[in-house]
Structures are given as C-alpha cells and as structure tokens.
Amino acid sequence: MPFVEVIRKIILSVKVAKINYFVMVGGTGSLHVPGQFYGECAADHPEFFLAYRRALAASEAHTSYMEERLGILGSSLREYRNARIAEREGRATAETKAYIEKYEGELRKKDKASDFIKAGRTTYMFFDGNTSFRWTYVSPSALYRPGKRTGQYEIVVDELPLKDQPAASENSLDGRLLGVSVADLAIAIADEIQEQKYVGKHWSAVADLSDDTPTPSYVTLQSLEDVAQ
Image (cartoon, rainbow, N blue to C red; front, side, top):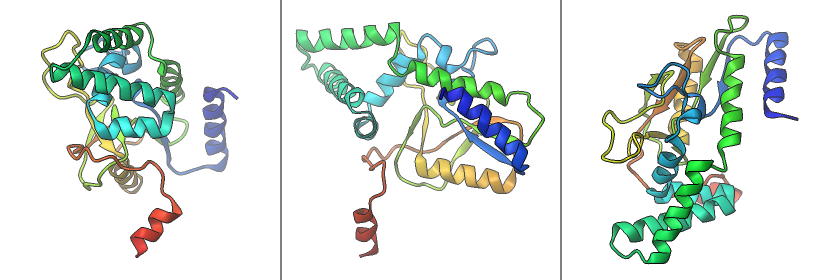
C-alpha cells in the first residue's frame, strides 16, 4: 500500500475515533528552508542532500546508525566518511579522491533516499491548513539519531533548523544542519502532548549532539538485563 494512502487511512481513523489530539511524526524533508521562497522545503532544495550526507559522514555516531539501519547504504556512507577523513588529513590518494567525486556526483543527481523523503513530505499536505481535527506535525531535525538524553531542546516552527551563518563552502547548507537525539525528541513530543502549544502547527526540535558516541538503535533484552544488573 502506498505511503500516502496509509496516512490518509490513519487520519480517517483518527476522525472516526474522535481522538482529542493527534501527533504526526513526519520527516525533515517537509521543513521550509529559511531564506528561500515559501514552499521550497528541504526535499526540494538542490543543496540539501549533499549537505546532509556530508554532515552524516562527519559523525561516527551517525555513520554507525546508518550502517545499523540501512545496510549497503550505510556501508557506502562509511567508505565516504573514510575517504573524507583521508582527504582532510592529507592522506587522500587518486582513488580516494575519485570515490568522493563519484559519490558526491551521484548525490547531486539524485540521493537514493530522496523518493522516500519526498513521500514523507507529501504527507504534510494532509495536515497543512486542515481544521477538521486537532493535530500537530513534528519533523525531526536533519541530524536526528540515537544519542544521549540531555533533557533540553529548542523548538523551531515551520523551518529547517540551521546554524545562523553559511559555511565557507560552495554549498549554502554545508556545516549548518542541526539535529536531535531520539531521547530528546521523545521528551519534546511528550511535552507537546501535555502542553499542546503547537496545535495545527508544523515544528521541529533541536538539542545538543556534541557527544558523538555511537548508540544502538534498538533495545535488546540483553541490554535491559545489563542495566538491571
């Protein structure tokens, strides 16, 4: 069943069940890019996917997360990360440079995850301007991953959370993407359910991700036993 059809049926079910407040968790791709004309979101921005992959590759925690979740896509990100590190440290060979050029060239044409991200963006169309039920739509910020719970976060409404100033790069989004851990986003969502500040709004949350220690994506029985002991 197509992704958007699933969302349509969920919304119809919410209306029939008369749910008091529905929280939809979408994707980063639907967030508006600051400084661009209204309607151009991250999924449409020509520089987003390259900046996104560069940011993921700059983080060991993100790279490990992608390897755990996405198999071969994660493996290619690891190779790209290693090549970028070698280039930064002056160890890049001709083969290394060729790999970076090929990897980024393919991203400029089309990111392999773009169709899924754009499908996620499309779901927001069911909500935007809809007053037939009470809803809030949260999109994780770009660098969303498992990580340390800080208990502190900031909310950004409608827009892709970015650092203020563009980096010294040909890509206006390079080095500017922000993120949030799974744990901190869960707190933000729980707070919104309780406080209901963003009814009928599209929002995101950001938090400190300076701890780059890889964190498992899934809880296992063994990990729970280890904590209990």
